[in-house]
Amino acid sequence: MKLVHLAFCLFILTTVVPAQSNREKVVKRMFYHSHGISFQKFENLNNRISAYPQFEQTKNSTGTLNFGTFAERNRLITGFSINAGSSLSGDRDKKSSALSFHGLSADVGYNLLKDSRVSLYPFAGLGYETYKVKYNRDVSSIPFDSVLQSNNFQQQAENLVFNNSFLIYRLGMGVSIASKKHIQNSLGLQLDYTGGFKENDWKINKSQSLLNSPKDKLSKLTVSILIRYQLKQKG
Image (cartoon, rainbow, N blue to C red; front, side):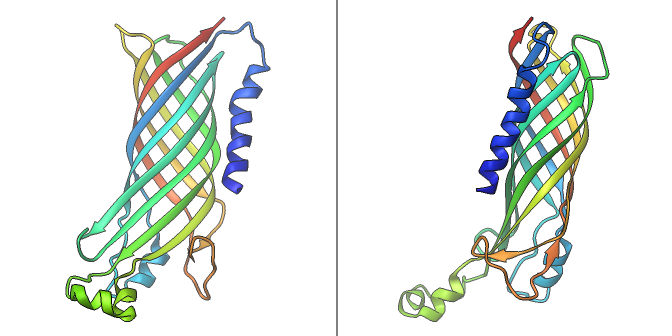
């Protein structure tokens, strides 16, 4: 429910509020998708996992995929994005760990350039992200029939999953260059830092707390390639 409520608030921020400002100014509305890589080390979780050789530690890098909208009015930019990413460490068919996340954010920025084709914009925003880490044990030595016959072997073959979530802030810089032939389309590069406001403990069964669970704070750097499409222009 927290994610739904936050999504509604961010939608209001990035659509209703800009629509109520000066309607005589030119408004550029754009849809974008981005593809990149983020760098985040959950150090406390990995340190705890390292004491158990049957589990693989998570990677520090994650592939990302984002979708969102921009609205630029008089060089002021507001945006809303849906963010996701995943990574795999180890052998998929044996011992491995899979990290995934999804979230959303609302951002405000400012285009520093008056050039009609080139945009250079710092931005800041707020949002929410949830993380899941799934650990797969190496069960290749367990006979097939043993899993069918014994609850003990079934439990050994089950995945172990931990979850975490963070209220986040984002700070970044982006540059985008529009195509000469198709001015409504542009290609860009974005660098941003995402941080959590506090350390949160890792939970099991999505929301259940554990005694002496490790805590981590979100602190990641993301580099992305953005592809933008102009949707509509008002004047």
